[in-house]
Length: 128
Image (cartoon, rainbow, N blue to C red; front, side, top):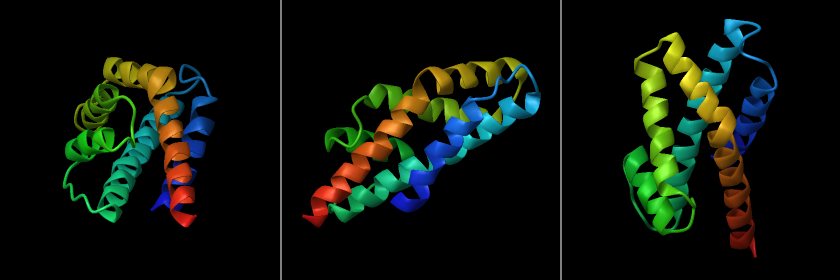
């Protein structure tokens, strides 16, 4: 699961290099990649927790338990990310898209990239 997730933030970073005002496709692609990245992140979080003997069944439960177990540092920010991810998938309009894009560029991308590094470090510790 980590191998699949590990590639996702790099793809998101590439999308964020483009300015969404140049072409709506960049805005759409960045949001789509954010959705994909978030889905992989919570499923990886669930898998790591399961490996450690903790069963969770939803993104919200994964985030809360991931915070308790030190997988994520900012539970409220992750829950906000979950809310924006859900919003992006169910109600799409230009203003909502701009808000989500700004959140991805301003904070969420860094959180997703940090999660990638934290899980990589955690996996490395298990190999020792």
